[in-house]
Image (cartoon, rainbow over all chains, first blue to last red):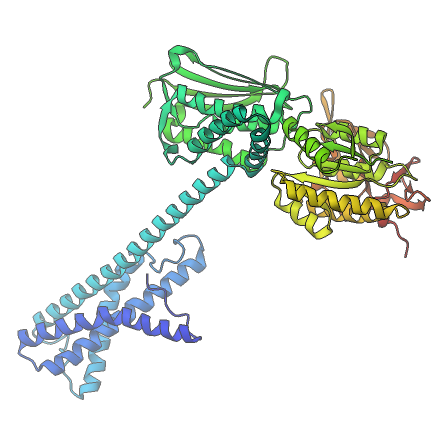
Length: 370
Length: 262
């Protein structure tokens, strides 16, 4: 997109030149083609025709361009949000009529200028007897004008599309990074490593088991296939890796119970969908509680729905102020469910109903979905 | 006399490891308490009055910083204040604050040479300090740490909703004379009456204007306008009299610098 005219500084001057080149590379060839065409058709002097077509062409372009910038500025002044940011295109609604006007005014204005330059009176009198050449030239200028305007439009449009695509890509990358950051929470990682370091000396066999769990957890977390699905058995295995790491860290304070009915093992689920819920239950429910508690993860079928549940006996919903990371985690679950299943899937968080305190997180998925 | 130490770390393996490493590097050090949560750490430290406290930052109950704050407030006069060493797995801001205040800290995973250096420093300070009380310096450091570690200010609270049975009382924040922490609740005291809200002072604090409401104790936040006078004691504590209420409040030595007199 030509976003020019920030003159003043040295780079500013360079940008004005760049802008001029951008503009003239539309106007000059058109004027040249018109000159060749008209001088051949009417057997006129090429140089004189060229002067005329240059004056007319550049006048038209000047009018179109100043209209484009002025209309954009005016519209944006009226309502700052009516146009996409940075776009210098007020829309066909304005530019269509303006271009027709610019063609007519530019034609006569440019002709008069050329008359003055060549010192003659070659402009065909619009009220003269033969209107056909005039009409033809007018139609031609109009055609060229619309062509030039269309070129400007598509250039602005393309640039806007490109900017939108870049922005989308940026925000996707950002979301991915944030997801990774929330998964690979440094506090969790370094504490796990600290435990591993101790175990290497004290109990090498247990250290090896813990390392295998950590490898499983890291591989699943870093896998780019987060958008994909895997079987519910795989999902539970990843959750089990994480819980095994946490069990080493928290010792007797954590009791984990994970149960998957055999009939549901092969059902496909979005990869690592449960992970943020399990992490929240531990980080905000059980870790802050002095006596620790229990986490239960289960799945069952409810009619045409698959229900996944994560419940803890931790501090409950009111106590913890979820930090940015876990809010992001929950939103991520919501968004993935909405994207994959629309309204037929849901996520709910509630106080566990059995009177033992803590939180119950429940995901419902349709069974017949992809 | 053998120096005594307390270790507070919520992960059992790490607790046992730190204990063993200390045993190896500093055989004379006697670990008199090894606990897994903040409340036990505070209770045992006040009871045992060890020379050194190793405090994990993230613990259930009270955080390591909160334990340190409570220790500074309640440490008995006449006993040299414990040397504090904070432990953290990953807390950029805390580490920066520790660095700035020259507070001793350890980063997990613990590395033997780093722990050895820490032990060296602690031994040197214990040997030199006999007549000098470490409390004033510790207070300075803690004030700076608490300021650096304070929660980011949230949207200011204008009205407090205190529920009693089926009724909710709306109390404008400006009517509150002081807030007092009471277990899992906060007592909200106005000139006329008292309400109980189900929140912690820690959560309430970032939503109060620090210009209007001063924390004078880890459990008390008082409206500055309501303080009529402040009387200093030898212990460093300050007694506050209020305009609208007959009772007196005690400002801890951690906050006594607020009342200097011009």
